[in-house]
Every structure is written in C-alpha cells, then in structure tokens.
Image (cartoon, rainbow, N blue to C red; front, side, top):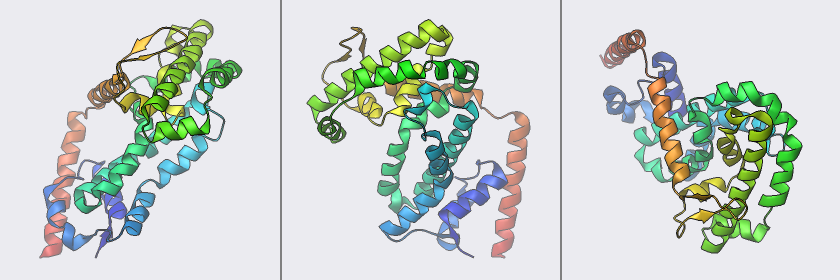
Length: 276
C-alpha cells in the first residue's frame, strides 16, 4: 500500500502524538510506502492537504477587520493555533520524507511565520482570555490608530514586499507608530498586563510585520511618534525566545514518554510483520 505524505503524517500523529515523524524505520521504508509528489502541482496539492485546517481556521479568524487586536474569542485563537501547529509539522515532515520538495514547501512555511509568535507565546491564551472584552471595547480606537498611522499606498506596499529599502523603511516606521498608538491606549484603558501581548496581536494582523523583523535594515528603525528605537532582529529574537519557553513548558511527562516508547515499539513490530 502506498501513502500520500499528508495521509502518512496523520496516521503517525494519531498513533504517536506526533513523536514518530522522524523514526529511522519510517525513513527506511519511504520509497516503498510513501508516494512523493513528482511535480510542482502535486506538491501544491500536498501542501493544500497538510494545511487544510490551518487555512480553514485562518479564514474564520481573519473574517473581521484587523481582527486580533480588536478582540476575538480566545478559543478561536486556540483552534487556529492547533491547525497552525498541525500544518507546520506536516510540511516539515514532507521535507524530511521527500527532500526534493524542500524549496517549494519552505516558501509556504515562510508565509506562515507571521503566526509563529502568536502560537508559541507561553501566556497568550491566559492574558487574552482575561482582557478580550477590553480589546473589543477599544476596537474603534485601535482601528483609528491603523487609519492614522499605518495606511500606506499600494506602490509602497508592493515595493516593501519585494525588499526595496526605502519602502521597507517607511512601512516599518509606520508599523512602529501604529503599534505604539494601540499599545499605549491598551495600557491606559485595559492595564499593563493586557498591553504585554499587543506587539504579538498587531504584528500577526499585518503581512509586512515579518518584513520589519527579518529584513536587514540599515541601522535601527525609529518611530517618528514615540522616538522608540528597536533592532531589526528584535522580533525574530522574541519569536525564538517564545518558542524556547513554550517547548520547556510543554516538555512531556515521564508517563507520556513511556507511552510514546511503547507505541514506537508496537509500530516497529507492525512494520516488521508487514515485510515478513
């Protein structure tokens, strides 16, 4: 029997809670059991299958204007992040099993990084749940911040997306002004705790926020409104810190490790039985 990548990943995830994706025996049997996509169109189909839940919940989460920092149900974020995690793991599994897909899959993975910090933040659900009503109450003010500070022309947006330095500088300065406008108001009206996740909520809502985190800008990005200065790589560092903290908090217990080992042995026995 042959398996598509997304199907095989789903089976292994169910059996082993996602811990068996890199098992050596699975890699040894990939040529026999896994049908790797042989064309760009087939890779796109596999990507679509891997990210079905992610895209479905993304559409629901972004249905409202500017969404997150204007207030949504925290369970919608939790459900979306489950789809995000499943999708990214499935795509990474595809690269591992079918290395020839790496270039095309990594491009899609990069487009998903805008939500990495949101879904790895160690306290986001807790803080958001406590203050979501206040975020909703401040929606009009936050939307006014967007219209006042962040609105840029289509030409500037396009040039920033293709990496034109001057356009990136404009976008990042305006993003900083917009963020400070929202954050200062949330701090004043909802409290300091509510404002601690404002950066994540604002950055997640804007496609070009990742550009400001990853592009190598000359010097620093300075906000014309607040005078605040931040390193271009600061957003990336925050993401890595959040991911590390989340991994520590999510470390499996000894019981889960024992169950995982038993399941691996069971699946290894099953694979051996199939070849006999």
